[in-house]
Length: 324
Image (tube, rainbow, N blue to C red; front, side, top):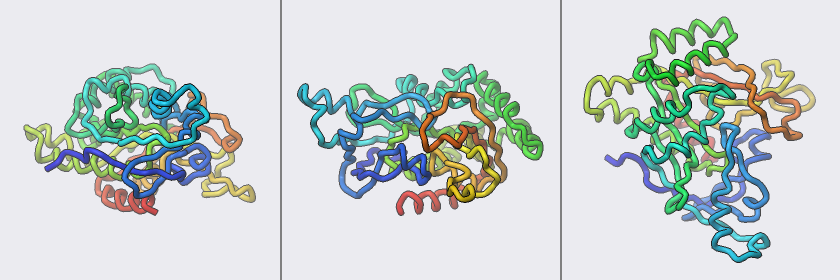
């Protein structure tokens, strides 16, 4: 049984990576059914793209083209071709994964290096996305699920739990959160999914498919029963970021302005939110992107608890969304 797809060749036209106004204004990734991905060189030269964590930049694809072109390449308007490939995480991915996760816990000083080591030390469940034959071996996406009980003694997980408990000010949720990360930690998978903003959207459903397939396989293929049980999740805990309107009142749109109450930075998060048993949001302190579209919004953290039984519904909804 193959571990994961080895290559995703996707040709791209300009289509937003997310379906929110903010996503449409920032994302350059697009879709088509050709054999290879194409990204307009002129667009890549115009700006760098932040990661979905709100940190770091990628001009990697642009650089490869510039290296192969003459000194007047800035006037060239062509395409850059790249094959994105799925790999098992390995120690050599440390720097690339750490960059993607720089603001995973906002601006908190914590054992991020230890957290990255946990991700890279679990190669049977988890994926990193790279460009084939990339000399720099850059990491464009990482996804995994970590059992909170398995790693409960790791400094980074202790700090992460403490961060969440302090961030939650919703009295209706705090008890549920405390039980989930404490008494029921053995049943909880922390889903970690970070990527650059301009990752082709067609890669996203296969990334999540690979994750949930690998979790299922691990319950049978891990060498010991103890390890198998670490992947028998009953809940998934998902941490992400959203932009919330300063005058949000629970409605999807804000009165006459028509602005959305919440802008999801990643399209899958709205589906997770709809399927979640409970959730809470909290203000972030990291410097946010300032654009005219976001002048009425505040960057917020979003934490969601999703029952494992909802994964099938999530996968179907996510495929339908991206395949539209």
